[in-house]
Amino acid sequence: MPKGIPNKRYTPEFKKQVVEAVIQDGLSYQEAARIYEVQGHDRIQSWERIYLEEGPEGLAVERRGRRSTGRPKKLPSKVEEDWLYHHPVPPDL
Image (cartoon, rainbow, N blue to C red):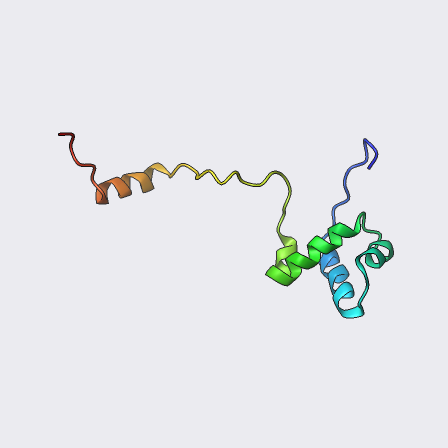
């Protein structure tokens, strides 16, 4: 996409409409991309995967940015205090 043109955002309702057209009407991803003016058929393919795995509600989830590194987040101090209270650290010998 040329510089200076922002990515187009699609509503969850629009995504649902496109995916259901692919499933019910038997449209290919390329046909659906052309008819609904979606940039890239791979985008519709990912919407379909989300729709089938999570249902229509999954299309409303914002999935932008980097994925988590898997590093656990630091516990809130209250949770840490409670855990230490119930699991005391033995004194050094």
